[in-house]
Length: 182
Image (cartoon, rainbow, N blue to C red; front, side):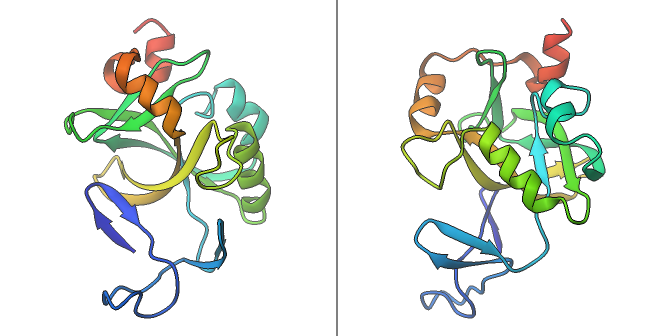
């Protein structure tokens, strides 16, 4: 695993990959478009309706987590969506940040939570044209400033392009505060 430009890049394979001197940590390719975990499961960075107390947290995560901690995704912008937000990396706005929580699943819950969240977020497979969101590994920061690799659902390319062109950013990057009128 290597951190570059605020994102974690996970190289596929074992040992030296493509002669770059990089080694794979945590994932390996098993077929095109399919990646299986071989290390500990990643936490999820949630920034909208999956945050504690929100509607989809209650449906999909309540009672299925062992840890929930405040976190931020630096260099990303939160946009208003149709009842839920979209978060996008924004190299042009490195000072922007998205506020959310880092969610760690309870033992035995990871597979079913991952499947439920993929379904909720409209994620079929990496790069699939029918995706609403893509599930990607990104580096987020917890309260003490530690960088943590986490799954983050980001809008698929066509939606991301529209948001960058004419989307409405959420002030302060905090969905819950903006919804509460703050």
